[in-house]
Image 1: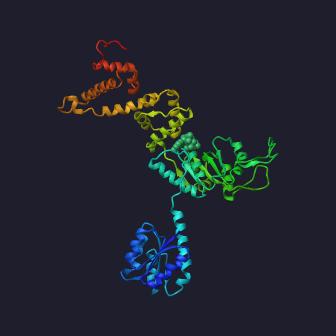
Image 2: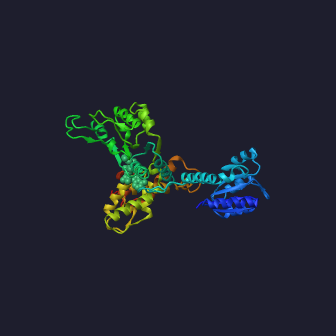
Image 3: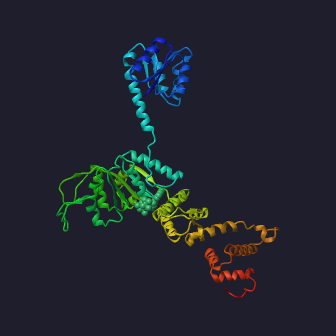
Length: 470
Ligand SMILES: Nc1ncnc2c1ncn2[C@@H]1O[C@H](COP(=O)(O)OP(=O)(O)OP(=O)(O)O)[C@@H](O)[C@H]1O
Ligand SMILES: [Mg+2]
């Protein structure tokens, strides 16, 4: 039940207003001073406050803000005995919902005033409430991903066309589905049209459908995907690949919300919401004359850019846990422990194929570690380990101090310094690889022969090995 507070120092009027509003079905309290009113407003959750202007302990107009900023953020209606119009202006400027003269029709209009103000408040609160988003298997908690989820919520609340951009494997299709599932169209179809996978001569009939006999081989009438998307969402994947002549036809469909199946004379209606995705730079395609700018503007009423995985490495740990758990569940295996180095190695990689590549890598690792309880960095493909070793080694090598090369004295000559570094490098390299030549060659990119030469030059061959290549 809505709660109202009336603040007025005229006892008789206060009593009347409280009784009338209670009679109208509200839960109502009264206060005879500003101080008492503010104390009550602070403690109770009022939705609406009727506030008198001339009070024994101050001016109601000057207190509007104090009342409006209590926790329940109530609406305030000013009631005044004077009816001065400058007071009205001040009241409205201070955020009062209305300014009413006691002498007029206050008693008669009281109920209507309260209903209107409370209705306004309910609508306002509804609009301000964050939309609860079903993530629909979108994993990640990085600030960049969360920004995308906010946009998904906004896009889902509207019916505007959406253009989703992002590198391959970033999750464009997943986000498109999430927009659909959170929208008012969720109970209807989500139809995917992959413009890159469809041969050009089939795109038109797939999209628009055809009537029987429309062309040789059209033995039966066939519904197009645009018709199937009626009431739901049409997802045009890789929209940048849509041939130019179809872009024109499609633009018309968007504008008219109607289409004509091939061979038919009749226009048919389809009420669909369009989401398009691309990993191409459409603006470049426009410049090259490969994409119509009018269609582009129509598509991107709302744009959502999904950042690459390298830009949100914080998500890698959560995604890894998610994919590995899912694989374990599929095979009814207990969850695996994932070692921190395993994650560290994954985080060092740049993931040009983004989340899809991470998922595929983990599937490969999983296939070879079914029996293991813990995933260690050693279980990852070799190139991850080499990369990690390199990064580690570069860090170590950076610690080599110039002064070391001459025992802390004056600056060495360039040649001396280079020689010193070379020796240090080979020494560190061999320690790092536990003396394993194959790994040392992989990390350093040196051939076996060159590595041997350098070890020999600097006396770094194990005793008895000099002169005997191993
Ligand atoms: N945030 C995420 N959480 C969970 N899974 C994800 C996430 N992002 C992507 N994926 C998964 O990664 C794979 C690739 O995602 P999707 O097909 O949506 O990418 P895309 O951007 O459409 O790629 P492409 O441009 O190559 O078509 C899918 O299996 C998808 O479920
Ligand atoms: Mg895709």
